[in-house]
Length: 253
Image 1 (cartoon, rainbow, N blue to C red):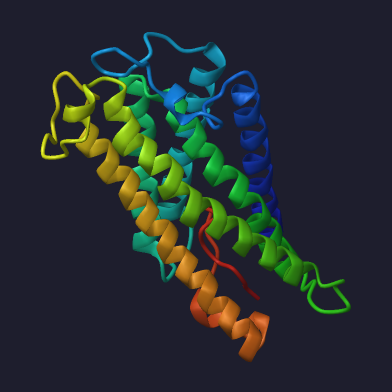
Image 2: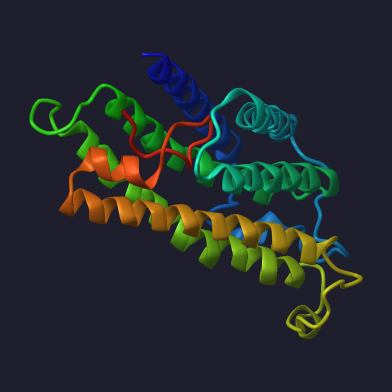
């Protein structure tokens, strides 16, 4: 029951943050037209100011990720993917801090939304597993949530993340503040004029994507096991234990 309660707290955080992010995006076209993520025609592509709600969202997310990193290091049992989890936390904290400092909050909001909304079904899946809501007796709740998690994970984190988010940070970010010829000359790793710390920003974002793929492979392996061995035992073999972040245990006793 303690694990279920801990996971319910994570679910509450991810649901509330998703709602907050959708609220911030309600009057923006950042998702529909990714070129609006950047201040077109300026030397850096940075907007001079941002709404209070956008800044507040960033501060709240920073606090959440610092706490989850602390919890992963000092409060939780060491898991198989401990190093991957800590890498994820460090990268995310660095991205939130850097994008706030230089003013790239719009793209940061979209990245955070990608993570939080795909965490929701995964949190629910863990909670259903703790209650053993599998098969007919559990109305196939775990199975339905597992399929939902896989679909959302691969669509948003594995497909949309590189084709939409990485494309805009690698290409459209440069086009907003440079001539087209210079923007497409990727031998200019430290352009000036151009987006600040362009190389660092995209190295961090690409590293985050590599973690998405790593966890996606884990999900795929669990799916194969589900079809051959059985849901509960397979997930136990692939990952042991729980942690405070969403990309951890898919199943547990």
